[in-house]
Image 1 (tube, protein in one colour):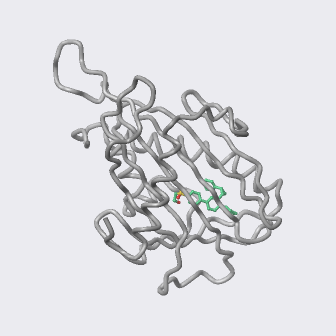
Image 2 (cartoon, helix red, strand yellow; image 1 turned 30 degrees about the horizontal axis):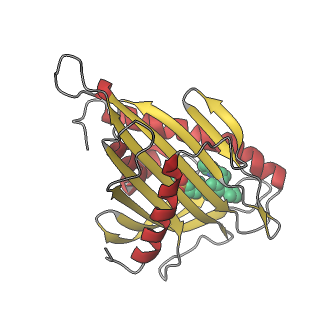
Length: 241
Ligand SMILES: O=S(=O)(CCO)c1ccc(-c2ccc(C3CCCC3)c([C@H]3C[C@H]3c3ccccn3)c2)cc1
């Protein structure tokens, strides 16, 4: 459905990201694993575009106690961004396009010796109907948050920032193990499978070695911090499907 000027672009990107749900073996297709931490595996590809390090990043993870909608809600919801984002300085919602779509402006903490970066992007949370089912597991529900760079007339960029371009998706699927005793579904019955992809173009020069070490350090940290945040935030709340 078209509700705003970016609807077509958003729907196109969602279609492309959902192709990841075929759970094609990340160890294939040239992905190099850079981190493994319990259920979380982080992969990258080495990609240089116009002399800039644009390494695609992909992480797969599986966490208990939360639903796909909860994970995507707290990833999308602007009001809690500061609770879990630690690499962002300025964060503003420039425009709210509908109840699940905003246009955000944010600056990232400077990474010496590179110039500070900012991002201007659309962020939308969408429920995925009839997702491609994978293997024998049938997901209870599938949600996606898509963040991708757009222009906006009201962006009032912080001077000195280089504009980074992002293409990010968080795809979450809830799997439920019904309790043996036929009792109600509790958080212990939940498993949320996550696929996170991030394509960040730094938008200007930054030393390859510095960028690659940041990526290797920051993404696993961010994914652990964010998933722990959602488990904590929801532990005493009603399950949100
Ligand atoms: O998932 S999101 O949509 C969540 C909303 O915030 C997202 C995540 C990451 C970025 C981002 C933007 C810029 C940079 C770099 C490029 C040169 C210098 C800064 C990095 C690199 C540094 C890596 C990184 C990875 C994870 C967290 C923070 N930092 C990451 C943007 C959006």
